[in-house]
Figure 1: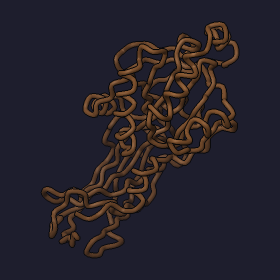
Figure 2 (figure 1 turned 135 degrees about the vertical axis):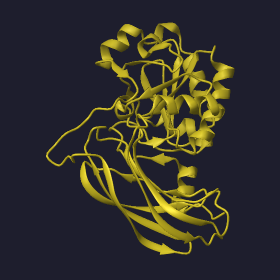
Figure 3 (figure 1 turned 90 degrees about the vertical axis):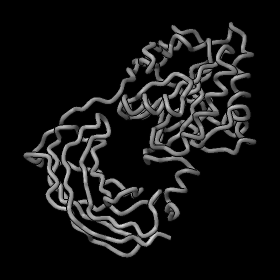
Figure 4 (figure 1 turned 180 degrees about the vertical axis):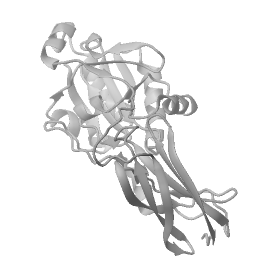
Length: 326
């Protein structure tokens, strides 16, 4: 099996980023575990958090204002495709199981994914704390652009800690949670005080498909052609000529292409789809699970929505290639 590219390995070590800038005033450093409390608590400038409400995958309702002053809230933002999240979530689950009756609550927040996909992920990993699905309103409000991101909301309704890497709950989170536990009831913020200062309540809900239209929209979703633009013994890159109408919105629409071969584990980088007719290139990302001397006989491309899993267009072209796998 060929090794994964450096960029993919780096994402496993450092987190998966969307490259969206956080708002001013929110601490975004990534301290080492030993420096976590001093670097992110005492020197950070706490930022007020908006009130929000939503429904967990379990069907239970949650309203942040009801918990302010009573519990420290730990938000863990993740996605199903984020490798480091699979390291972070089990550790947080163990911490939550041991401390959920001790004035702390851990909440997972998946960002912009299909509920069916998220439910499968939660069941299979498993994720043992409550989970919300956010269509980006909450993540944008809190400046979340990298997964995993862990945010601690203190009893005073402010962001007291923010980590952009997998966390060690016992060394990075528990000291701060314990500080909050020791605050006298008379110094804790009430729900009414929090609501008066937090502004409008955000409604956290899974994303929905919102069609877009415009003068550049195509008349139908279609993949017209697939052309190989690079081919060597260990690599292939294709250019896809496609058209997209906008009927599934303007977010998270991709063309995924793969060489077709029995028992192969090819994976090509997706093409982010634009409204109208365009050409996009998809290079091979990894050979994970592909045996040496594999022969692929065609290339298949599929346009689909990451939000509702709808297949919008697909095309397969014949192209025989013998792979040199090192």
